[in-house]
Image (cartoon, rainbow, N blue to C red; front, top):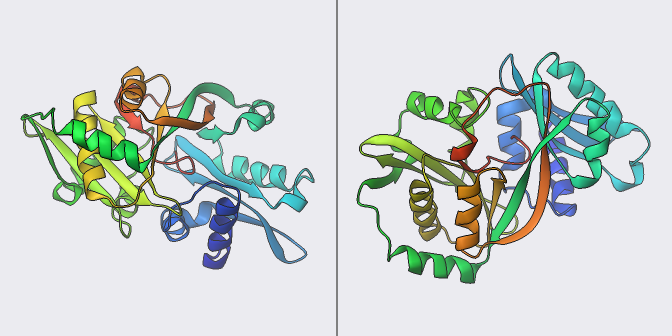
Length: 282
C-alpha cells in the first residue's frame, strides 16, 4: 500500500463512521508497510485491509473495508485469503463487527469475548475530573511515558498483549499530539496510557494497569491534560474491574465488536487490560 492509498483507506474509514486517528495513515505504514493491503479494480483502489505480523506466533487482521459499490463481489474475500496466506501458521486475532462474525467463523475464527466501546462526553469528563480530586493515591506516581526505558515498556506491555511489539510501541506511543503517561507503584512500572487525537475527539488505547486504582490515576491525569473530548475507550468485557470503572464514571456504551481468534492465542493478563490499543491493530 502506498502513502496515498493509506490516506484513502483512512478516509474511507472516516466515511464509514470509524473515527480514525489523525495520524493513522502514517502510523500504520510506519509499523506495518508490508502488511497494509489494497485491492484494485480497473486500476483504481477499491478495498483495503491489513495483517500485522507481530512475531512468528501472532498476527492481527484489521482495517477491512471495500467501497460500497464493490461489496459482495468477492473482493473482500480475496484480500482475506491473501492475509491468511501472509499470516501462515500464526494465531490470528481480529475484532469483527456483529454482522461479519458468521463469515469469519466459516474460515476458522472462533468468538472469544466482546470488546465494548465506551464514550466519555465532555460533561462526563468534567465530572470525573472533579470526583478524582476527592480520591488521591499517594503511592501511585504518574510520569511521562518518555521517562520509561523502551526495554522496560516493552517487557511490561508483553504481559497484556499477545506478542513483543517494541517497534510498534516506539511509533505508536510517540506519534504527533499524543498524550502518553506511565504509572509507578512503589517505584515500579505499574501501568501506562496513550491517548491519540481522532477526527472526532480522542481514543484511549492502550490503557494497561495492574489495578483499577492505577488505571484511574492514569486515566484522570491524561484526561486533565487533553483538550480533545469526547474520549473513546474499548474495554474487553471479561475485565469486570474495567467495566465497573466505565460504569461508575458514567461512560456511555456506543458499540461493540467480537474478538475472534483463528488458532490458540498466546496467554495474556486480560485483567490488566482496561483499554485495548485499537480495533485495527489489536
